[in-house]
Length: 92
Image 1 (cartoon, rainbow, N blue to C red):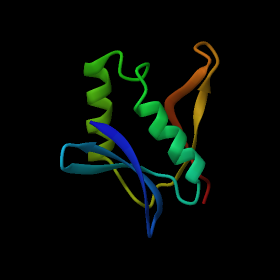
Image 2 (cartoon, rainbow, N blue to C red):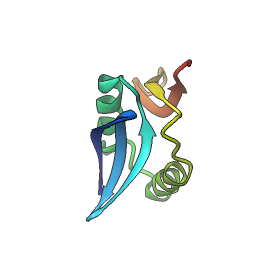
Image 3 (cartoon, rainbow, N blue to C red):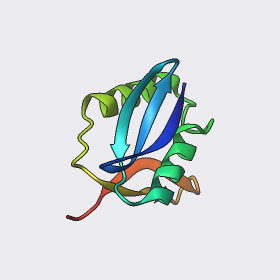
Image 4 (cartoon, rainbow, N blue to C red):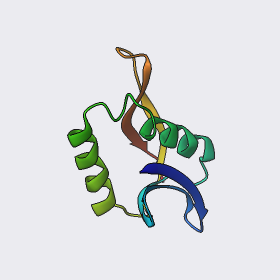
């Protein structure tokens, strides 16, 4: 299981790949670097420490995916010194 970045007509999309099943999570529009950073976060050991919480979050993102919602860079967590799983919506 891992996060992957793809380019679609809606822009860069981060999807969750579990074997042969690929489910979209978030759309980043033209922000390729934000999509790459989000993939790196999801694939990190730090993000997956609490496996149950992580899996619930992934399932929530899969069930609420909307290609019209575009996101930008993940928020910086000052306490941990890393990017968090919180995303900022792009202004339209």
